[in-house]
Length: 255
Image (tube, rainbow, N blue to C red; front, side):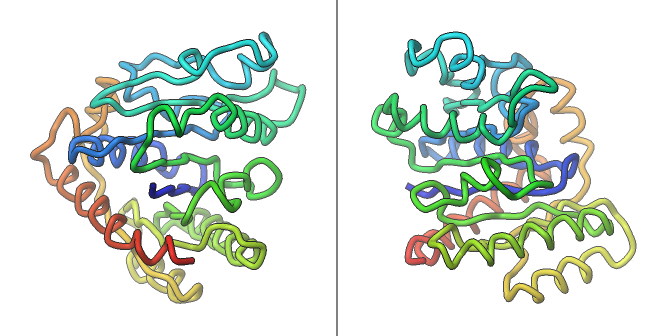
């Protein structure tokens, strides 16, 4: 089982990329689980026709532990297995706690034994890497962390902070830094900036995704470009990224 955690600055397109990758993996015949680790609980909407599924934190808050695996997990487009951590009532509680509760509940309810996923993708709110937000990096969860960034200064800054946190956590047996995904915003010297960032952390660019009108149209249809436009250029790039991640699997699992 390959388990990857995706982090990145809010609004960088991380959920779109994770959902597209999930579809690409599923269409290649693999069993995929996507776990949204963001209080907005919207990571998996493109797999569920725009519908937000019940979050684990809502179930825990209202039912304690008296809920079934079927109530916290839903199969979406192409059979992608979807779960959402959720967040606290605004102004009350810790958002990171939702991630901890979700991952613990998935294990407790036997999700991995029941569904036997080949690939698990964690879509994590990336501006904060502490407490519950670091949970997917812990031993037994993700094997590697992939950071989504553009060449915009704030995105580069956030990506650098996340990468530094991953490096610092690695000494505790946490996930390794898998690399960076360049999600282009067409700013000046974009590729050079992201390559320099990757070099600073002795890492690499795993994938290079151009801006795409198919992505925008797919979001309007509440789906992914891989599902709506499988022969498009962006879908080809997503599949290339999926192949690259699989090529790195052996290296990451040794860490």
